[in-house]
Length: 274
Image 1 (spheres, helix red, strand yellow):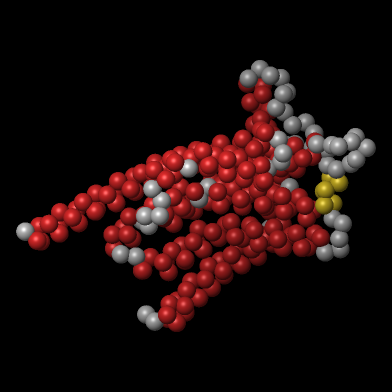
Image 2 (cartoon, one colour):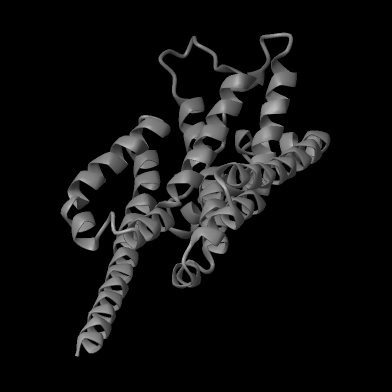
């Protein structure tokens, strides 16, 4: 195809992917009771699943109510006329993007895949599944781990007892969505390492050499997107570091496979010359 034909093909893939986001966005907007009351505002209530499990863990360890969340001393309010409607739209867009992500990525992959060699397409088989799986794992980790711990810390932190925590709805929504989407993106590290290794831009030796630098970057990222307490930062940084180590193993596997392919090509070329 010509360059313009490629652009036309890409346009239709993006239109179909964007349409799926819009459809799920409309569904999320109409299902306000579930999306807003149950999901979005869930971490703001003490009966949230994560808080209950922390309390059960505390009792199992024999530490009484050390990990139990008994109070979240803040209220959520809207300070602008369009505050609730605007945030409802934002939440619906984010929900639509999360639910439609597997299909959206599949459409993008359908455009990329014909440009790959048959061997490359064969080795990249399952890319849509693993990218979508890691994305959803990141969403779940951000929603059930990072968000409730962050909300618990920030709501209980006070400069002075005379200052009340009356949180604007925009601040609450942006905090939760930022944490969830940030975790979802960071969980793509193994797939990024796979494709960069396939392209020859990254090797396991490079990743091992810069392991210490990566730890610093991970801690900095954890400090940026989590509250300023060590526990929340470590809870975010530890899984990312584990994913980094997994990425090294993936890169090593791809590198060995690349080396074997190079050796096969050399042997074939020698046989031709002979």
